[in-house]
Length: 388
Image (tube, rainbow, N blue to C red; front, side, top):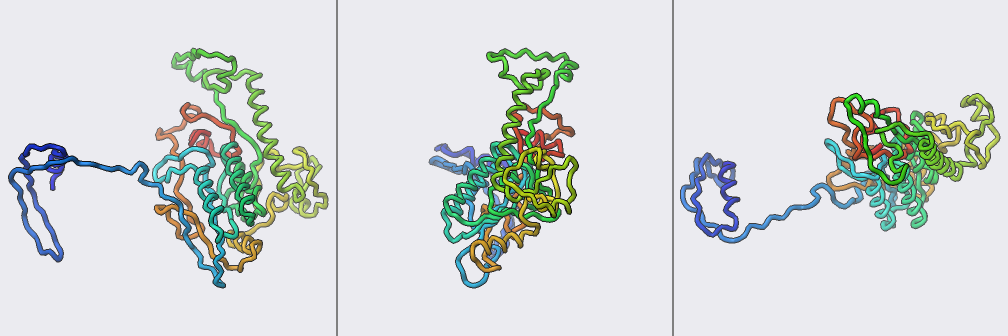
């Protein structure tokens, strides 16, 4: 049927008067009915009544469900849940081409709630592949994981994949054990807040900022003017506070396993492996990775940032052993119906949309406010990807 004819039919909804409609064209039906040829309709069509349409407010989201990827052995009903934590950790819904549009914080909470209520899940493996994200978002994820441990008291093993830095490593420190690939990028124990001064750029276009404000420091960090020294000190104090919070968490979680070096020069891996002095009282000046640097998985193990190097199957086997399960336990993923889940390495398509312009100008989009980040940030595009 032609588009015009359909438009005519839709327009007649609720009309009690006859309307003349012409429906022409070729209609072909092949199959068991055995009808093939031309069909024409010429005459009056009477429609009475009301047409009601119902639209689903969210046509993508469905409740998460367990997807079994390994049946396990031994006939036990106990299972291990692999919870994937991927990409930028920001408390906002993502939007982008091919993206699921998920809020990482909300999705993680939904998975934690499922595990809390499903007592067939005897252990959790956090499969982490993330450079980190917002300070608050990272802390919210860690709080939800801590709540799960207090509620269920089941072992949690974090497995760092390609990247486990910043807020992603912060989350990992709340697990019972951390496994990293030998080639993982680990660490990033630091804080960053991206700010830009565009005063000269605006001046080139004769644009002058004329803010009307009450409260002298309400526009601290505005890119429209040079930041004053006392304003920078205010923001620096906040960054230092969040950094110290990160350090305290590492001290609490890994203190007795961190390798301390009082040397001015960075120790070699062999020196760290042979170090005998280990103490929970680690100062920022004594432990090299507290300066925000990243290291390889092998270096992270030598420094005590992770418990062992290995792969995802090693993390699963470790979690099974901690939970008293067989070495080949049943494994599940927690996914939505429209999210593929063929193996434990599948990643939910959830990437933020960056600017559609050929170039990205940091600080240009003021609808995405900057935030303090636990984030390893070698790529400046992450600055404007989703509020960084």
